[in-house]
Image (tube, rainbow, N blue to C red; front, side, top):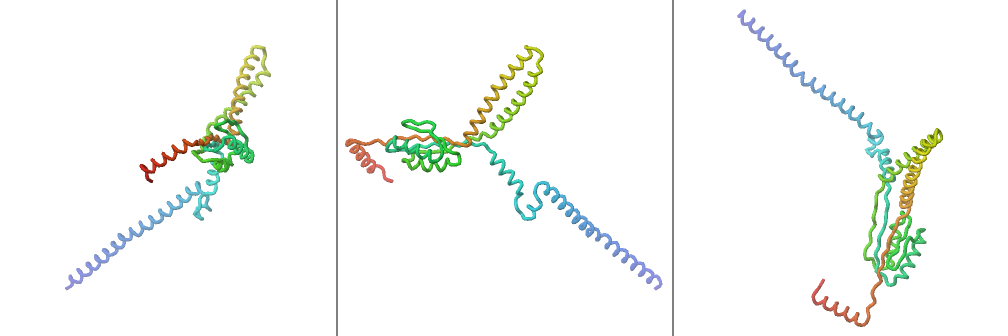
Length: 251
């Protein structure tokens, strides 16, 4: 009996130790979970810090696009150098009256006539009024075809501008050398380079002036064809054609 109580006390002690061990072991996931949540919070802070470099904080809070990025995109779009031109083919009753009407419309639109003939006329109108002018011209006859073309010269325009700026800087340096030339031979070499640079500058300035003019004014080429007037036999033949077409072709 004495040993039974002894064994019972040892068993209770072993059970108590086992329970304490389990508590310690199963408390680890709770600690790990806390650490995982803390790490997630750090990642969110890092992400927000990285996002602040790309967007304004106000734009993120209001869930709206960055106004600065939109403004920059709009500025780049406005800076594009795009040349527009139009073409129009009309079937008209009289070429002479059509030419007179074209000149009248051109004058009303503050444009000018570049070339005019018996079958076509080329006019220049403000680029902003290209579409509106075409709508007026379409009313002068039966439209056979029309199109609006565009040519993006942005890269070429910027390239010519850079080349022009460099050429002017080089010319200034050669003028300084010319002023310090010690003999005729040195002066002649500098003058030869200056002559070349002046020719290059005139050419580049001419290109920019042409593009500036084309950016402000757009050409429209109008081609017109007079309707053929049928005689008596012509009307007979046309009537026979319509009759045969009706017998063989049905819509």
